[in-house]
Amino acid sequence: MSRQVFLYDPPDRFVAGTVGLPGRRTFFLQATAGPRTTSVALEKTQVAALAERMDELLDEVVRRSGGNAAVPAVAPTEISDSAPLETPVEEEFRVGTMALAWDGEEERMIVEAQALVELDADSEEDLAEAEERLLQDEENGPPMLRVRLTGAQARAFCKRALDVVNAGRPPCPLCSLPLDPEGHVCPRQNGYRRGA
Image 1: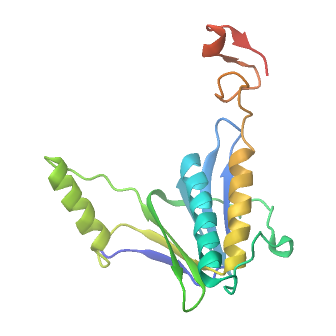
Image 2: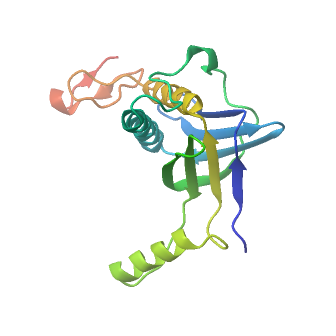
């Protein structure tokens, strides 16, 4: 079976969003161009890591270009996007591996999210070899979402993604674990229930 690549170059919209209530949210990356929309599921930590690494890569591009790259220092307010995800949200796949790159010629951020794949191997060496073969296989690899963003679009994505991640349950001031509306059993309080 040949690899399915969902390519958005450029997207009309590329956002991170959630479905569900805090504590039970499912995180998605969603790319839209015209009538076509692709949604892929991922973990909260993956969204946070993606946004942080994109921001770091953009800062590095600005630094190396001496400020001449078409990358704003902060997310432009005119393209900020706080609208909900396009519905219905239909998961194409769950993300396993993500990659980032900067195309210096076209001044575009390239984001790739590849489907999670279970690999069977007898040893760590066999597993590493199987992973490498899978990543190099452009013809038969797992499904992939590939998005090419301008510097401004990438900054706007980072801001929204971090806002979405931080919009969850507040952390306990003692143990930093998430607080549920009804409180939680705090290990720093020797198991006594703390209210929100």
